[in-house]
Length: 212
Image (cartoon, rainbow, N blue to C red; front, side):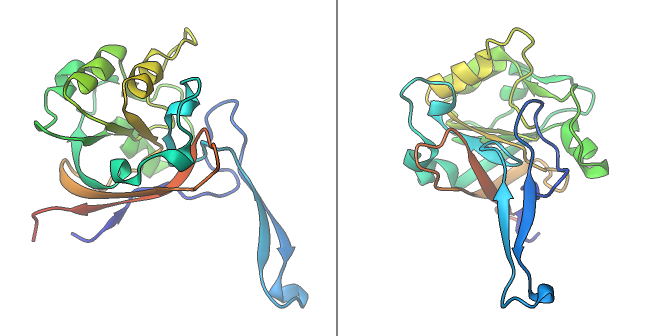
């Protein structure tokens, strides 16, 4: 299996978390208008599409995206499949993470829904606070999920973000994992180098490990 691009395309009308800035692209120069080259002006939020949450997103005085160690974002990872009928990632799903895993991506029912249509849905599968704590106990330092947020929290307190980012783990959101079955991969993730950025839109790929 070849390298998989599991990042969300950026385009006008793309899914955005409610309240976040939407993506726009405006033509500045165009060859078909007689200009020498094509050039566009882009506007989007720091958590648009596939992106990394650095500590400063929720931790006062935490590191911005430009100070995140890229080795934390790149290297071996496990994709763990959560059963289609499951409404959340629970500690029992964390139990299936291979021992010694530093990076884990959860493939949930969200990915099949994204594959049918790229639009935001409120009932997305997310990580529970208990699962977040279990991930930290297992030593996981990068948690990825196929939703625009790692948690669904009506209280507005964001316990999963606080637990993970405050506990030394980075978060990778907005993945498209429909074509990534459960297994071991090499993860490549390069967020934009935004100075003191509270989020980093990223191009993310997975390359299967140990498969012909």
